[in-house]
Image 1 (cartoon, rainbow, N blue to C red):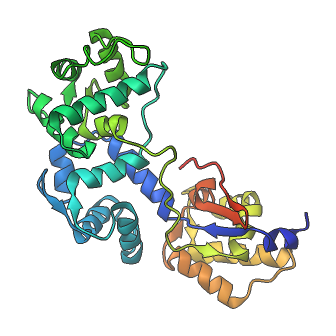
Image 2: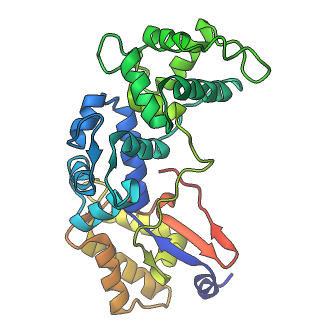
Length: 312
């Protein structure tokens, strides 16, 4: 297909910050095994307190200090909404973006769903993330804000895991199977499970990860050109990156895009370069490998979105 025809067909959006940073934040928070007190301190609230939009922005500033104010507000709104909410609801939103545990046996997923229902029955009312925080506190017998394997197994035994299983869908959840579930929920293999790890495993999850691409994004010919020729742009970025930092300046990146447009016979208008530099936030370096990753592009046409494989 001719290059010009390709650019005229789909709609290409490039959001080199929003979705990638949201997913990275969720993964890092889950893997860090932060304790409940640490998560509450991150958002400067009590464990049963309220997180305002301002507190959410300040938390992102502490975790992602390189973000500009506008980026931070956009990401906070996208992740947590624009109204005050509970800490458990904020953690629920992060959990939806984190990677779920890898379940090695078919019975494990329905077993986790069965355990989630037991928690709601004994520590409800719903939603699950509210009931789960009450369950977690009750079963954390040593008050370490982490569940050991024994605390996990005995905790679920005490609310009837064995008697709520043993049918065609979920085999009997005896202690051996509960220890197996603990091992897969313990995502970072520390021998303990944090509240967020438990939430990621048990919370209700949509079939697909929530779409974060609704942040303001660069659209049009420049994103399409970057998508089609990103390998060439990556090679040029690496050539300029003599210290192998993984970054080049915004000015240098814009010059590369401008040079590529000339080579392709489609010179870049000044307004297009201005929009590119505005998207990259003039004065910051560009982490080019991440900025050109598949997770940063969204392609759509009249028939609906064409999703690239997202790895971020």
